[in-house]
Image (cartoon, rainbow, N blue to C red; front, side, top):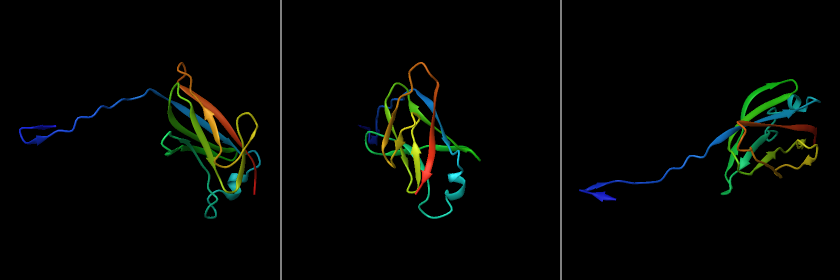
Length: 126
């Protein structure tokens, strides 16, 4: 909009209520410690894919001998696809089903919860 020679941009901004998704990457056999980030391309990325295709990665909170703890904010009451990417590690989802690299795992934080906790398990490596 132009008022008296000054240009103003007006836009609408909408905030969505979010909650914390807390992920545990359990590594009972120590595969992550043996391989992770020691060679190029052996990383691990877990993130939520937006409808436009953008990947929002999780944040590493802590790591120990038994795995890693990751966290991210997600909109509550909205189904979101999580993707686990790794060229070397094999994973099982929270139900124990093998999850291929990049395959989606759908999650939704209920509107009455402030967080949701899930555990993915490293089951092997290539």
